[in-house]
Length: 112
Length: 112
Image (cartoon, rainbow over all chains, first blue to last red; front, top):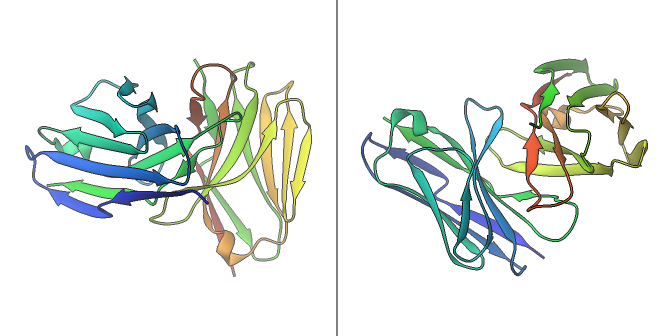
């Protein structure tokens, strides 16, 4: 069966510090991978998606970036965090037709 | 562009039926989904319906689709306290990389 992992689960970082959030998927090959941000417990904002290794598309201009160094690994990064980067970050994967997405447990980021 | 709208809040008594509504704008939508998010967790895919269907039933869940009015609803029969969560309506369309557009989420509160 497929599983998706995210870490860390929670993170408190000062403004201006770097960020690295990691997501890995097990039990499937060549998944589509997604990073979302959920602010204030609501609405999902798609940040990045990837259809393959090294293929990253950005949906929203910001100070975040994403990379996919391996088939089932997706990393969200920032060189300098802003207060507005606080939120709940969710990684998701999908494969095949239908577009059903399967979400990881999320990372709660607080920028102070 | 695509847009998905939901009411923000719904309160029901335990044992009653809950009906969560959603409207969408993209007439080319091919799949419509309902996701559930419990506090502090990722999203869980509950059910989905193809755009050529009017209804889908899965145990206590009934999904109704009115394609003419672009209206989707989720009915939960015999609502339990464990059903308290945020419910997201989402849509996608064939082609591309299966981008999913989510609504803002409806918070369901079940009163014992």
